[in-house]
Image 1 (tube, one colour):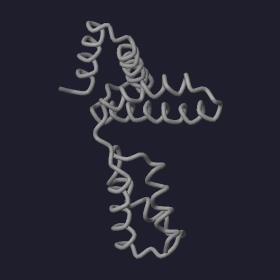
Image 2 (cartoon, helix red, strand yellow):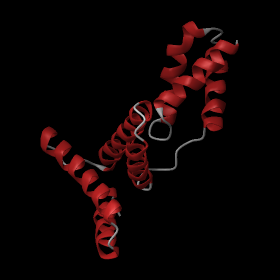
Image 3 (cartoon, one colour):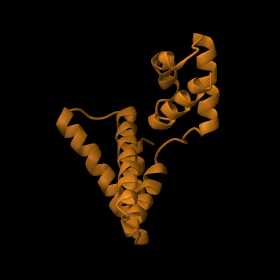
Image 4 (cartoon, one colour):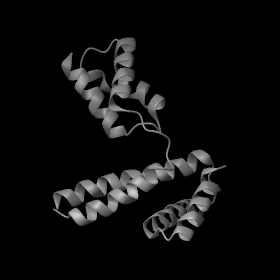
Amino acid sequence: MTLKERLADELKIAMRAGDVERRDTIRLLQAAIKQEEIDRQVTLDEDGVQAILQKQAKQRRESMADYEKAGRADLVDEEQKQLTIIETFLPQMMSQAQVEQLARQAIVELGVTDAKGMGQVMAKLMPQVKGKADGRMVNDVVRTLLQER
């Protein structure tokens, strides 16, 4: 079952169950996918759909941070609920410990000794974690590891 089909099925289930939050979030995701297909004049494959979902999740995380700064707990809760729903359609994300392990391997393989080699480490690491880890978290882990050296 493709991700688009799964979204459609989950929408039907949410509608039958009367789960308004889940229904609305899935509709937002479907609209974002459809908009991308119209803009690019293509039918998105599985990777393209997954990229849209990751982008939507990232938007929710950024919005949550902004709302926290503004002291809007009500909006943070709403974004968190949407993020939780979006994450059910994404593959399991890597933990910080897993990313740290990969980063340590990359640093050793490349022989990087200071923060100047961060670009090399990131270039090697990002293809391995694409779609499985947040880029900001990967960046923070690599920066921390290189500062320790």
